[in-house]
Image (cartoon, rainbow, N blue to C red; front, side, top):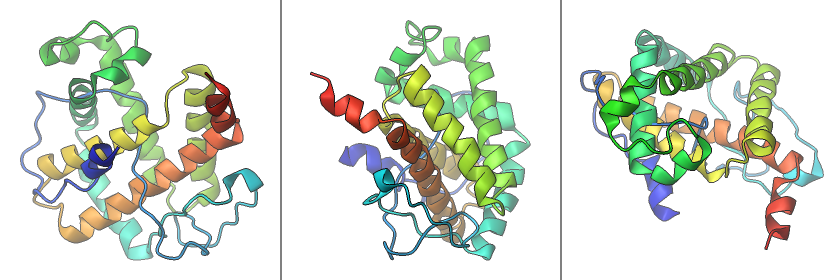
Length: 225
């Protein structure tokens, strides 16, 4: 698990040229960054957003994004989204290649080993667009915590109840996303940008795992033999 978490921190290398040849897989989203002030309610726009559901008590809240950080994320994402499909495919291919166990949730990709074969898969491309569009919705609504909570809540519940995806894969995927962005857009991925994106990934992971908890994932998992 230490190895998985460290992925989220490996984006010091500058965003080089966008590579369109090697990407990875799927579920959707991010790593958790402990809140510096655990008692402070967190929301993406930095406004207070209490989550009083007792099942979420004890979960570390990510550090809130500042207005400046939200602007940084939106400016950076505008560049990334210009090559939405290429970047998404690169992310998913790397995800599947580096973490082949994730392929168990995708019948279309389970037997694919060759990155070039994955790149040609229409199903992988379709899922890449889905992942990128979900991130785009979040970035476009950083000012609206209710919208973000709703979108990521649906993502979390669908992956927990319908697809039965272990939540740790969202943390792994987050690390892969940060790694690819840092490599492909290094000229603008400064330490300040890197910090902002790490905090955003922590937020996504927090919301999604919160949805898992709400549907009783922890209880179901702990009762399984």
